[in-house]
Length: 172
Image (tube, rainbow, N blue to C red; front, side, top):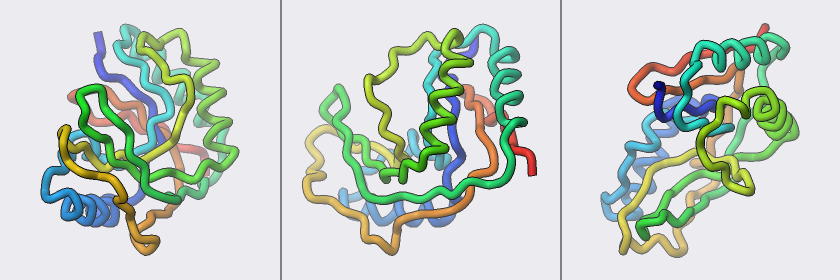
């Protein structure tokens, strides 16, 4: 059984992403837990536990082979989500171009049978920077525009807890 499986769009380069994490960590007094934001990505679908990982990877690979060229990627703001334990998830909001919604919808139609995890009723694309424990004041936090991130997407990644992501590149 493969645990913690999710499909993502790779995020921007690691160095500028880390710079934003460092900035936010200073704002929250050094309490930012970066474990959920180690690798910049935008989760498209969280599957949970998957038995037939090879089959899921095959569907994703076949889909990406139908795509050509790079797609633009950018962040537009700062977002805070409340965790069940009272802590907070700190994230950068991601611009929501039509291709991102189209990919997610199509991939969920094709791979939903692999999904064992509860899905949120609305999908809010974001880059997780990290989390803070309960009690850390995050009200009014913002990230200046010069720290917003942009780049190009040229593939998808299938993540499995404890392994390197499986990369599925678009055709050039």
